[in-house]
Length: 251
Length: 118
Image (cartoon, rainbow over all chains, first blue to last red; front, top):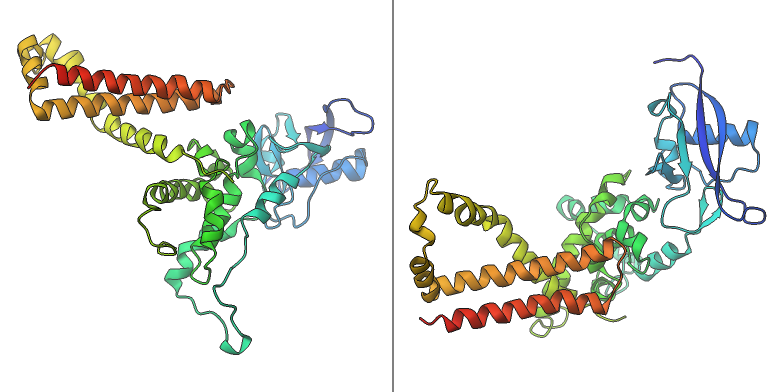
């Protein structure tokens, strides 16, 4: 590893709504070592060069999902991307695509928060379980079914990657769909009848054109594209079989 | 929330995609290269008499109808979504033109096959 300090140019999208008509790029010369992430570069800028630069961050280790941004045009977590991989070129950082900008690299995520709430991302039990009944038991096979989809950290990289969400933000989107799938597949859950109307709706899965970029940029290997496309099949089956299937037959 | 009617078009699109992926290339090879050029297959394979009797047999009719109508619905759906992707959000108009063309093509193919007799 090269431990000597080098200088990289970081080009950062700025937007301060009280004084800027439109967003613009500002360049900073940032000293860095091989172990420094893009997030650390931004922190250097904020601490040493431009205190007014705004960005979200928290855990620094790809767990919290706060620092999603466009890095050289690709949706990535700033804490999960190294400055050394772009050097000696200029590194460009922008706010996540497809979302309104609140300030600098901070996006307005109200649209996603409303969608997340609408899919009921929690276990809905048929009958409430009393404490005295003890914990739910689940076999490793039952866990395997949904575990991958439960790794979502709501970082919104998949929404920034999804061309269909970019064209029509009414689309429920990859992240929320992956969570629908995660809860529907959980053996403790009986809420799928409450969630599926959203899957079948005009805002639902059929907006997806199977591009697959969402799964490619996902930092947690959730594979939302798979969740969406499995639910296309489920939704199509239900569309034709709903009149002959007894209510509650298909969980 | 309004339920989407997309499953109808999506299933036709999927079926057409499957059929075209499985036999599209070999159809192009047989009807476009191998038979006309007399490579591997005899030139007479696609003679008028052969093709006519093929399309008068019930199995031949079914094959031709399935190929034509599924390919049409597959391409109509793809064109409709591609229009949206390149920024032409014509909505209902585009839907009518794309799926209307597929419906017309399906009807024309069906009538033509029936008129050829048995």
